Image 1 (cartoon, rainbow, N blue to C red):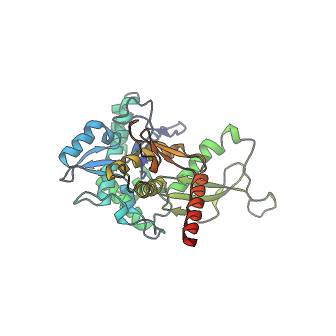
Image 2: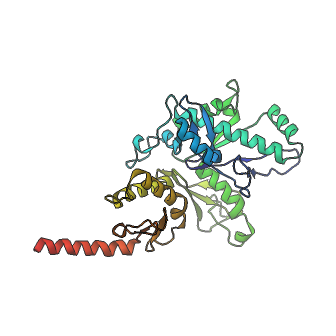
Image 3: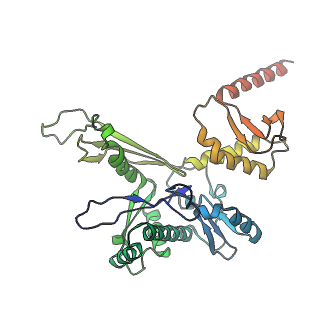
Length: 358
C-alpha cells in the first residue's frame, strides 16, 4: 500500500513446483488499460463514513460527479496520517494532509483499502487461473499468509497499526494468530529482493558480479563491495545499503536503513505553493485553477522532468487563455528552468540596487 499507488503480487505454493511471484495486472475500471499492475491509493467516503469507490474506480467521471452531488469525501495521501513521528518532518504537519472523513481514523481507512486489494486479488485469481474458483476456495481453507511492506522508518507503533488494519479489512479473523499470518517487511528489504531476483541475478549482470568480503578465513581477500537500494516512493525515500558475495548467497546490511518524508507527493505539494505564489494577482490564480494546474503538473509535467535548466509546461486551458505577465500563453503556463530563473533574479537584483542608489 503506497502513498500514491498500490499493488498486489501473489505466489501459490504447489508441492514440487518452483515458487513464482506473479503480479495482479487487472483491476476494476482498468480492465482495458493493457495490463496495469497498480492502482491509485484513492478512496471516496459518503457523509456516513461508508466507502463508495476505491482505486481506479474513484477516478471515473460518473463517480467524481456523484461525489460532488452527494458530498462524498475524497481521500488521497491518507497513508501519511500513519507517519512515524520519529522521522524528521519540519516541512509537513497534519494541515498539509487531506483530512480523514468524520468518524474515521487512519487504521480504519487502511483496513478498507486492504479489503479492496484482497477482493481484487481474489477476483483476479478466480478469473485467470484454471478452475480459479475452486483454487481460491482451497487456498482460503488452507490459510493464506500475507506479506505487507512499510517504509523503513516505521517501527513498533506503525507495525501494530498495520496488523490491526489487516483484521479490520477481513484479511484474517481476529481469532487467528496474526503474527503467524501477517509478515511485515520494510520497503528497503522488499526492493532488495526484487533487485536480486530481477537485476543482480539476471544475465545482463552475470559478468559483473558484486563482491563482498567473506568471514576472515583467508579464502577471499577481495575488497568489500555492496549495493545501495534507493526506493523513491510517493511519501517516503528509503535508503538501504548491503554487502553481497559474488554468488548472492550471503547478503548483509552494513548500515542502518534510512527513511525520509520527501516522496513525490511533497514535490507536488511544493509545486502547488509555487503556483499560488507565481499566479498571485492573475485571473488564473483562483483556487480551482491552481488546483487544476497542480493536478496536471502531478500527472504529466512532473513525469517529464529531465533537465533543471529546461523550462516546464503546464497545459491547462484553451488557446484563448493568455496572461503574458505570468508566462501564460494559449492556455499553457511556462515554468522557466534554473538558468532562466537565475537570469531574472539578477535583473531584479540589478533593478533593486539601481533604485536604491537613486
